[in-house]
Structure formats: structure tokens, C-alpha cells
Length: 210
Image 1: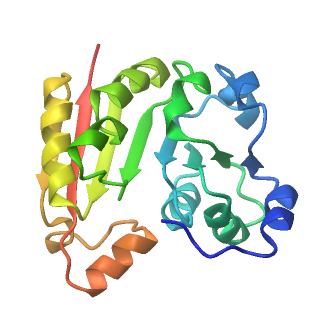
Image 2: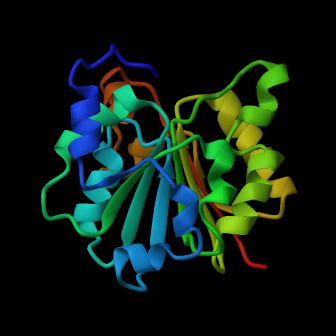
């Protein structure tokens, strides 16, 4: 979702030590060197205003997190929220379509939280769980492939279940109402709004070993 233009956007982006938005390809295959450790790397594609990825980085210091977002206005809202001493978090400005040009067999988990559902049939290829993107993910995963998905859109969720299964992923923890059984969940900004309105959240884990 596009936000209103932030007048201080460029100042925020240029001054953040967490943001990488140029020459991303130079780090391809060496993101562990950027983090200066061999810890697992989890990425969130479409991180929005950052609540989910920041809270995960705070809770799990032995995991490296990378938030991916393509809109500068959104990044300008997220970056000021990051604490000064969070060493296991980086933010990348990029379009997810180029993800296999930035990572190479080094990602352990992908989070897809409230991705654009692209509901029209002619836009199916743009869905982040379409075969086009699943093939790209093949190139960036290190060993075992893990995709965690949350959405309020039942159509996207049903499509994703079918697409992931057909691509060889094993699905688990599949639910159309995530918050009916658990309260110990790190949420996104969207998710908090949906919960407040009583809108159920669909969720699944997809894993693949090959």
C-alpha cells in the first residue's frame, strides 16, 4: 500500500545505517559476510512499516533478518522505528521480482505477510506464491526451504495452498483463523488492524527438502 509522500523521506533513507538500496548484487552470495556471522538468514518480502521484522530481530538475536520493501515512502515510516544497536537486521529497497539477482543459496526462511493478492487472473504471475516466484526462491534458499505465509485474503490463501503443494512443498499448521488458538504471535501493522476489526487471518507453513 502506498503512503502519502514524506517530505523528509530522502533524509531518512540516506541517513539510515540499516538500509541498502544500491549495488545490491555485489553482496550476492556473501550476505553472511555483511552480517559478519554464519547465523541463519530470514527474509520478509514486503515488510511494510516494519513491525514484524523489527520485533523478530529483537526476539531472536541469533538469527539475521532482512526486510525487503520497494516503496521509499513505506521505508521512511519503518526505518525510524529500528533501535540503534540492532546488529541482526538489514533493510533492502528492491522489487521482489529481482530477488534471485540479490541472493544465492543463502536464505533459510521466507516470510510472506499480507502480500498483494493480485486478484485478477491476468495478474496471477505477480503473486508471490506463483510458480514464477517459487522458482526464484529455489535459487536463494540454502538447504531446506521454508515459507511462512499470513494473509486476510482467502482467495490468495487458497491459491497459495494449491500452488505450493503442486510445486512440492509440504504444508503444515494450515488455518483460516490463526488468532483463535494462539496469542503469542508477532504481528504486522495490517494484522493488528484486522484483528481489531474481527477479520480472521489465514496462515500456513510450507517446507520442502531437495
